[in-house]
Image (tube, rainbow, N blue to C red; front, side, top):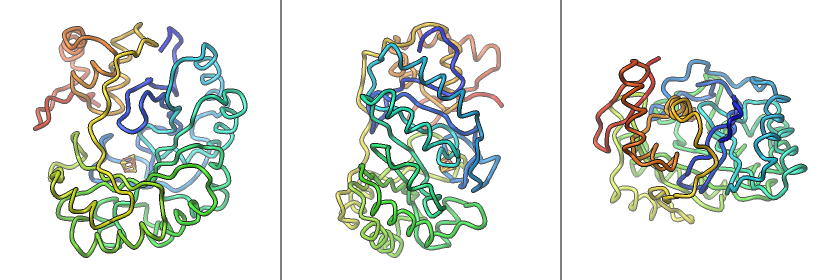
Amino acid sequence: MSDHKYNYLFGPVPSRRLGISLGVDLIPHKTCSLNCVYCECGRTTNLTIERREYFPGETILTELQTFLEPKPTLDFITFSGSGEPALHSDIGRIANFLKTHFPDYKIALLTNGTLFYQPGLIEEVKSIDLILPSLDAVSDRVFKKINRPFRELKNDKIIEGLAQLRRSFKGQLWLEVFIVPGLNDTDEEIAKLKDAVHRINPDRVQLNTLDRPGTVAWVKPATRVSLERIAQKLDHHTEIIATFRQRTQISSYQTDIESNILQTIKRRPCTVNDLSTTFGLHPNEINKYIEALLSRNVIRADVLERGTFFRTIQ
Ligand code: SF4
């Protein structure tokens, strides 16, 4: 990213599914309609289904204009972040602005998929190229255990909203299912998920599981064998999301490295290797900044099976 200070844009970051993706954060940290047990961003602090202008839409447009004018190389501009982007009431306006002023860029929406039953949202997102909603559970009991939703959210309405989205939306729809062993990997739940998937009819189903620390310690990753078994059962263009592609040519931001590292860690815990890939810097170089941040007690280290993850101290 350039010298310009951005409050609502982050990255570009290498993403498993989207290549080099510029993140647009439309929602304050952990403002979400769900409070998933596996959330990488910690507990939801504002559990809500209210759609409104959480951040000033006009300022987000100005930041996008400034960032995109030099025509950086990107695979996607992605509405994502550490809350539910579809809660922002200007999402349609921002997507339309991008399509009008920067039509060469593709837009993606990473969403928990819970809000499409709300009037107007499907119409607002129609200019987006790729929507990646989640659906982890069908039965009420499992939905409540994994996703701990806002009290009025009902899964049958959510699934109908997703099916309606598919019927109206011309872009690609990739449905993510996050497997939490012991909760949504039972034969019974998978059979229900299979029915829901066929009803929604997404272009792809993507199975995911924990690979970074989540909110609660008892959530463990599913094994590859278990994901393959589930993929076979779902039987609907289902793939297991592989480790993200390595990208080396991320030249768009080399300044103010410490602050950029901190911003990235704030959004999700990262290993030195994650940061090295994100910033295109050697791990030794990243380590210098990590040590400085550790010594100032701004971040802490969590040692997990997949490596040492750094997260901010709140
Ligand atoms: S994983 Fe996504 S949907 Fe779930 S609580 Fe976190 S931000 Fe919200």
